[in-house]
Image (cartoon, rainbow, N blue to C red; front, side, top):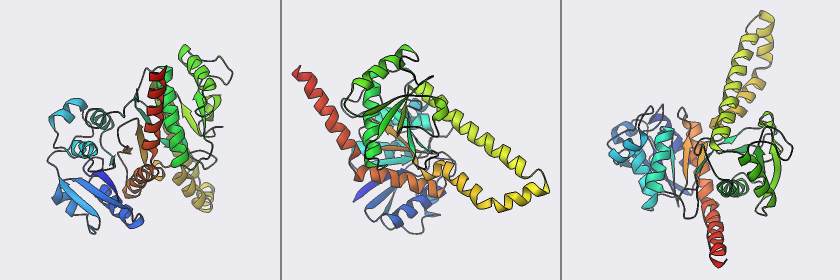
Length: 337
């Protein structure tokens, strides 16, 4: 049985959506068990079916707007987030899902879960929609503003394993986000990463990919440093939101537009659904000892269910074990040199 720890109190709509998402996950996945960390009285208001769901009492909630996440994690080991994260080192859960404050979750993961041996830099890697209908992995979306090429090689390999085992890509390829597609473009970091990836036999390297192709990429994985990829992600989110508002304005500007909108209603709903992060679940933090999924702070039950499903798939397909084997082989090769 796969055990998933859920921070039931973290998020904009906690614990209602977290609890309902957990019940939906239990209904659809017979091989999982869920541990909800939070206030038992508040959880009980929504937990109508406790089948394979356990409630672990906690005494504190880390605020979504927490300004000092490291202090919050250290001073409140009894918080729902900290107790859920701590459970991974105690082997009480196989993975953890939280909609809590992003920086607090990252800080807590580093302090309480820690990196897997040999993994130099963790990365935040959301899965974003694409025009082809096949989602794309985007990393690193904020964990490392500065990074070395060899650390990005580890992250790219992790993404390749994830793409194979979770997204079902048989031969996933990696693209480097850059200002142009030609060889030799970009900063010194980009040039070094390009040459390192090109020489590697760990995965198929497509080459440079411009940000304008982020929603229709020629590869399965897009990678850059945390600063660049975070800007790409937020620009994409802002553009999608702005275009949605603009489209709504145009479709309600006249009677004929409103009539056209009625005929296009299903297509518009399908478009909105395809661009929704709720369909993906959450962003995996690469390189930790065990899987931690960061779900959207505003996740509703369906989105949180998908985050739990994502965590279970990662455990079921032994993604972390396969990366650990690679790291162990790398360390052994270095020791033999």
